[in-house]
Length: 337
Image (tube, rainbow, N blue to C red; front, side, top):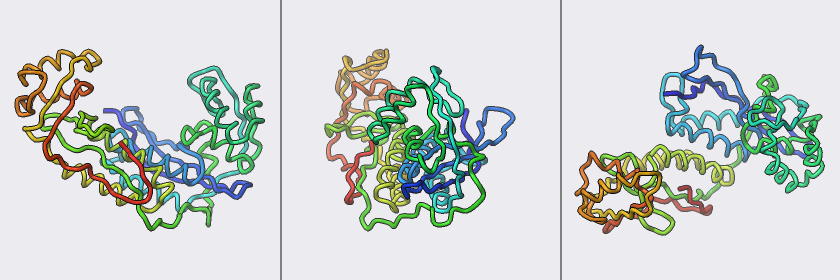
């Protein structure tokens, strides 16, 4: 299976003219199925400290499904994100570079280029922050940032958290420590509130039973996908309510380790009209085992329960005395599933 192998991480920092510190995230990686396996550095994010934290958690979500790995082992969100957060506390100085920006009518762009397809949303972001002049210049096809420290906020809006490799090179990172510029906010007294994804496993199936917004139980994604969604979303909480992410990642791990199996007495209801993507035959097989469009889970052989994932849009589950959703409570309210 193809995967990105991560080897090392570094962070660059630059003090903008407005007094705000901006960070550039650099990661050394290679693709496992591309030979020779030669690691290379790339800038994977640029923005304020809060933006950098959110990007770190978005990148870290790829660890959950194994698409991002270490050289010799599977990574964990706790360990991988921890390595980034350590680097964010002790950055190196970023050069005060100039950048020539060009708008091109191509989907795949190279250094300094902006795809025409991205222009509408980009101009909206720029104008919303008072950079009408920059948006007007980009309408002509080009714009020059003379000093990054003078227009770091402009580049941050263009990058929008990721794809910073288009504008910042690994050669722009120095080996000079950026003393006093590290991201190390005080830990908030109150932890944020979040809901942990999933209520039950299904024996014989990869999908996890989740609780929908309507309170009903539905067939959800595979475990790694739910984990990834939680990790990616938690970055927003950590950026606004810092210092509690380690507990949240530990809670997530424990939550899935102790998640109960859906009991055989659970009632499975199947609505064929809501089945999409050509999986009606899977619904028919399940209905055959249930004896009707509604029946208990124990009527479905374990070897056939994987079909529940294919018809999940038309499945509703009823369980007597089901456990409450696992949640941790604090001042910041958010749902991450």
